[in-house]
Amino acid sequence: MINLYNAQIESISIHRVGNKNKNEGLFISEEAINLNDELNALLKEYFLKSFREKEETYYQFTHESDLDFHELYSISSEVFLNPNLIHEKSKAIAKHLFNQSMHPHIKGGEVYVVYFTNMLLNNESVDGIGIFKSEIKHDFLQFEEKPHNLEAVLQQGVNLNKLDKGALIFNTDKEEGFKVLSVDANRYDTKYWLEQFLGVDIFADENFNTKSYLKFCQNFAKDVVLPAEDKQQEVMFMNRAVNHFAKNDTFEETNFLNEVLDNPELIPEFKHYKTEKAPKYKIEDLTEFPVSNTAVSAARKSIKNVIDLDTNIQIKMDFINPESAEKFIEKGWDEEKQMYYYLVYFNKEEKTKKQ
Image 1 (cartoon, helix red, strand yellow):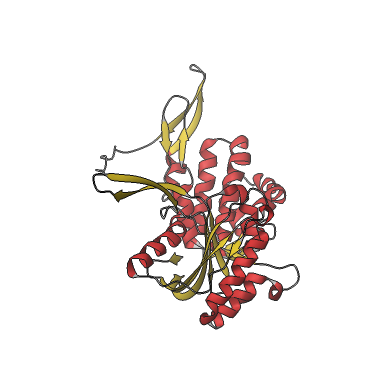
Image 2 (cartoon, helix red, strand yellow):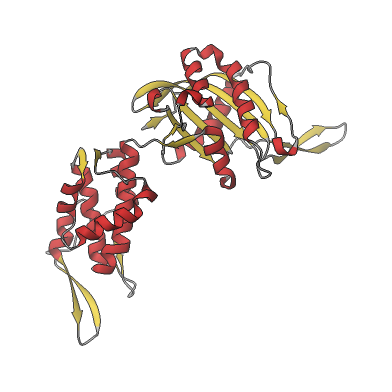
């Protein structure tokens, strides 16, 4: 879990990177800039807001032969050992980005290289390096006082409410390639930012593994359980899956299948489906791993637990008490009406809770 509210900007360098293929230039600043308190607060919010609002997916630097040959990994390693190098190394970062800016769709813009302290990652304070890029310029009006009236002047600048691209490199897990977060508001050139510039791949920690496996289960429920059985069993399968993760510190696939799949005939179907779909979720060899409670809580909120009927009626299942849905709901077929029905048992109607 990440907490960026108390992060402090220690240094910030700004350069301008154009599109190399269009013969646009590279402007390197000789010195880091000095920030007053107001600008410091505004830029900190501009840089970090997008990371607080998006779902956490961590990356790590990767290289086909050795991480020491990875440019950003090497730069980060040097800077974390000696933060005073940050401005000089920011020049190398800007040049590296410029060299990757070859596709005609890539927009030029300002590049900000920032050194942060007091970033909380899993309740541990770590330093971080931020690399941010502003690409889209917005029109705005300035007004000048003339002797007898105000004159409107049209100018262009950066909208501090929306970051175009950004990456945070945390000083942790160095041997694996550091932990990295990325945001990109302009998805048409994601490959350029993630692969060519950052050179990262997914960091497969317990949060990613838990989230990916539950997402895989959700699609198995939709693609296999629903056609083989019915909507109730699809919902109940995911109900049992989430609760299995919630009550176990470590996931073990055999135990999971025996507990969660009521119908033993679906176990080989599950294994076959995993063989086909696992690469999409990066869980090919994943049969045992630590469970992330954060990922389980997020999954519980996002997974739909409602049976929608074509008669404009919804039946909401309870993910906290799944035994109720199994004990007190029955599905049947009415010959006279030629319709399915759900029979719900209860003792009394609960009062509606006030919102």
